[in-house]
Length: 261
Image (cartoon, rainbow, N blue to C red):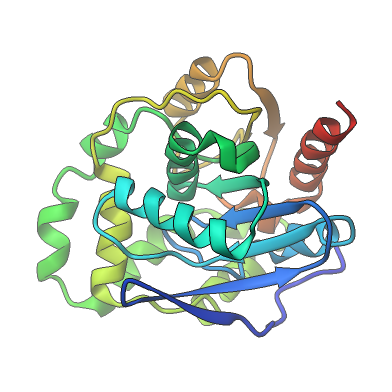
């Protein structure tokens, strides 16, 4: 695609003493993007720019509060003010978890919700990283960063544009403080009842995601049995960067079909 990983100027915002950032483009019905554990407002560029030709698109970094429920309530306040009308909401990875609970709690805010490379049941994640919440606070941030990069960038070299995407993450995604990164990890591990969503729902996922295992992906698809589904054959945990064409096609087709209906 034409859009690669060039820098764009983000806007800084404050919520409850926490700084977060946004990158806004285009006009029309709004589409809002919430990133995963390792991302910020810049990671959606390869799909955001094409969508901004017909939609008002706003990508955000995270608001670092302790609990998922607090994060959801914060986004409701922020988006009610910044967007000011019903919007399409997409979240990926832990952002996909956040948007599910947003859709359950604030359905009147939304035109639709898209859950990307995420999960409903996090039991496998809790089992795999059961000591994370205890161990991370005592590790130096340099080591935490290396561990996180190794996990999130696993297998990038096998994908088209994978080396460029890995370099983008390492050099251009905003560096988190230790407390911010730990907050995002804990959002993944927090025990919550499964959400109940009544707004139009879209599930988009990669068949080769190395972070979200197949059992967890299958459970997501079964739980949202009646949702629109987009499966991307390859693209790892970051298909909107590594293999953006089918991701864009699936998302555009979903939101556009709602306008037609």
